[in-house]
Length: 293
Image (cartoon, rainbow, N blue to C red; front, side, top):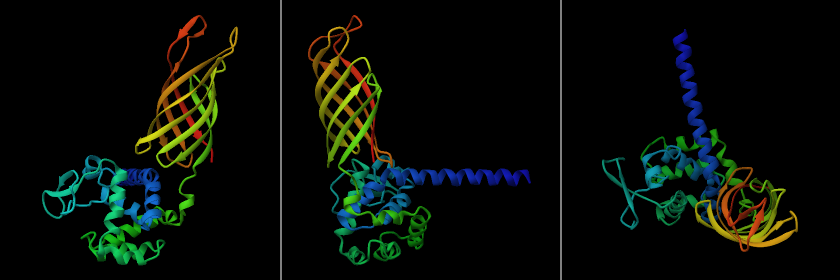
């Protein structure tokens, strides 16, 4: 009896762990799938289910080393980098991508630019069952259970909810936000996203000195930004002074229900800044900026 309970406990832990990994995968890549759907009319539920299945929740060797989440092989028209992996035969050639987003884009192009998949686009984006069966019919996978596996994933994790997202809903551009960090304990600002660009203005305070700035960040990798900003530092101790500054920063944009910008950088006062008998030439900072829904 004890042995049976122990085995059952192990099974429950394994199942829960696998489910948690799948949910993390969905959270991380659902927005990319929706973006691709709005551009190429491939259901986001299908893209996510294929990504989960083909990449083993993003943990297969093809996914981790080659950023290939859809098992797309090299074929004769591929001129990019490659990775070798056993599949239907030993030592097959698969495509290798610079980023996961590139893999998602190539998946969209792979389906939309090949005649054998053209009939799929006659189906409604919300009919994931026809799309699942159609992919098998078109020869995307050799596994006879491929449609069932996709449909089970879509229904288990309610992936069809992403198929109803309209393009205008995919992402707001203008956000107001609260920031918290060091040395600036709190702040407020406005942030405008336009494709790979972020424009912002903000005010932050340490309750000893404050700063106001405007800035620009550019996306250099998937969700990673680098940029500069300029503004003023206000020091109210003794005789209040205003000092201009320039800054550089790195930022990561976390995509969840509660969007968060994780930021770090340095401010350089353009004239001497004295505080508590100390002179500051560089002010490192760290901020967590919560974008308000």
